[in-house]
Image 1 (spheres, rainbow, N blue to C red):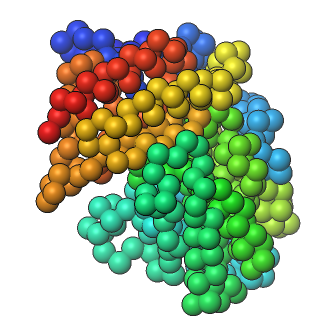
Image 2: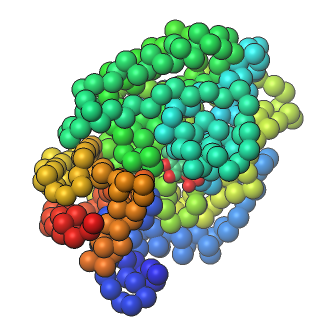
Length: 412
Ligand SMILES: Cc1ncc(COP(=O)(O)O)c(C=O)c1O
């Protein structure tokens, strides 16, 4: 049980200080209990607690949208507010289908995801998602969905630092899907530029560009799900800043408010935005939105978060620390059970050989063992995923990997 938090640490109910190796759940990018954020929330609750986002507005929602488009990739200049990553994904998927229809191309309804993709837990997200445990219990899911293959190729790419050399050709799987369904039925492809929840899979060199090219060739929208990668995780504000490939939409949440108040945001291009904006004044442009879209408390939190990121250079701090982080992480190569290590910015993964017949058990033991040693890690399958707050110091990186080395030697 976690009862308090400050900076890089949680406090447990038995009063232990735990080093946060996961930024909460990939979201507390500026660290815990940041003064600007605490003050902004205190001020906002006194000033304006709630305002409807339908018909009405409030200044901070517009201020936040403007600030966000100052740091968003080129051309992604419009923002739709949601309350979570899952809602951002649903919003982007619905926007894609509605956009084509608004342009008179209503036959484009198919949504294409990727095996091993994680896009939250709502029906659209689990349908385009590719994690079996999240899908198998929930019936037939959304119709008209298909998946390209995942990019994990441990035989060719194990222990790669940064982007893997091999696998650009996995993007060509989209051509197979086009052959099967015809491009005229496909609205959008959604991928995580770096797949986080499935165990931290970097895009192979050239892969995202190839996906972009195939989408362009066939008039398919490309959505990047940046719920994890957005706001500095890769050492840049957003994934296009490092991969050089710009999608048509970006979904975000988590780091947008430092995880403190639930909020998400979907970035879209002028072209997508404008496609909905040609009706008469009294008619609703887009029949989609949430009671809490652009909630004033969330907007104030996000504004204070962005200010903190800016003042402390946190959106690019991952790049400054990346090589130190990389060396420390890869120093675990050769320790028991380790079959792959991968990294980029301030994210890293250690893939463990599963115990025969008992998948996930080894990684779970590592999680418990690390927690006993006062370090919080996250595991997914038999992969340890690390994503500390971007304020981490070098000596805390040493501490994190020192503890992990002990954990790997200790567990069965
Ligand atoms: C890429 C991605 N998309 C969507 C989500 C869902 O976000 P939330 O849990 O806020 O609904 C997550 C959560 O980890 C994510 O990693």
